Image (cartoon, rainbow, N blue to C red; front, side, top):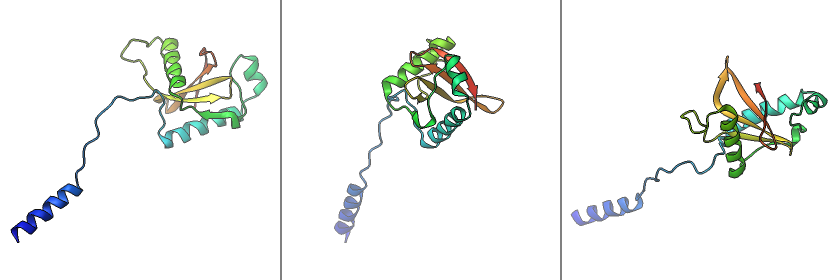
Length: 141
């Protein structure tokens, strides 16, 4: 009986051989939590849906039809966005420096940069950049 019990425990423990995943640094500057992506993308699209395209373009701001606005998941583009944000706000090399964000393409004309929790009076800040990473505007959502 004792040997059967020992073998049963050995089999059970062998089946439960679970290893903890190692802790690694975030590999991408692209944030992609699905609920946040959906909420931020909806807000960006809503902003462009109710904006006058002629006014936006004449001010030199990025413009695209809402169907051309998409979440960016290419790490190099997100890193460019993070670098541009830090440079524009003077946070490069400081403890306030961003390392990742939600980035949305505005067709081929620019990007919207979103920092989770960056709010004023409970409204999220959205940073609008040209395709060459010039900060053009900030909007509240």
